[in-house]
Image 1 (cartoon, one colour):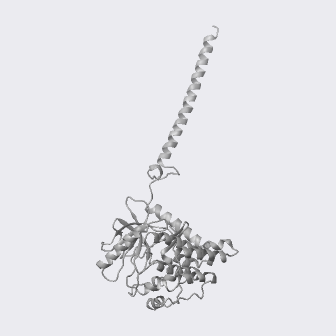
Image 2 (tube, rainbow, N blue to C red):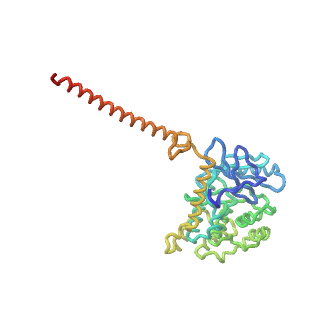
Image 3 (cartoon, rainbow, N blue to C red):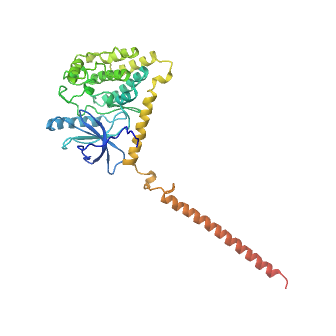
Length: 369
């Protein structure tokens, strides 16, 4: 384990130690909408991300029904660029959802820890997000809570998580966080139904964060004041790099009907990359510091999997402790080899001795008396 673990944090005293069949190993995330735990499960391989539903006061039947509907929707969203939903219990005393665990930092983590991306790299990431959203929307699912912390970046590409699950139905409630409000579309802030165009707006706000380190609003420090800015679509793109402004402005169009489709957005992103390609050919890739952090997450994820959820050994053999570099079966094989070699030497020596005796007998027989 690393001295400064990236993934796992200890369970708090008030945290459960298990949810359903899942044993909780530690916290991997927390926010106004719920807590996320790393977990394993007896009889299965791999690790899981188990998310709980947090509400103000007692969990009501309406909360549980909404959570159950969202789980049902999330199950439809399974794909190579989303985290698979395995199990859920909306009716538990603490409702929970278990998904595939992906050992990767979010875009929010990368910006916070490593800084912003070059405009060309940011445009490429936005194009990759558009591809992932196209696959998601093709299943009939709208994300509704897209933001940098819900987009993971692995060495293989983008993964989307948390499709609006545990999202507040009333955005004026105090549990709504700045991190959520800053990325919702104006129509969501006004309480209107979410559509695919809401995810387009969220991509524009995410692009701002990738390139500037913050969403396209002044830092009010107050979710209610920020909500008012969002509902009026009052964005500020003054510090966004010039090459990215047409792309962000297209996403952040106040009227949802005027926002580009995901296909059009990918074309805009590609045009931005081509028109403003820098002399440094590596600028289209994430920064080196981002790549290093992604690698650190993957290494620690493998260590956690090896420690808490080892898969079955190859060819069905049981895992065994090595002694001086060899397993017990290895030592048995080595012993057998030594025995056979010794036996060969013994038989060879015995055969040679027998041959000498035969020759001696023949010689003695042929000698004249």
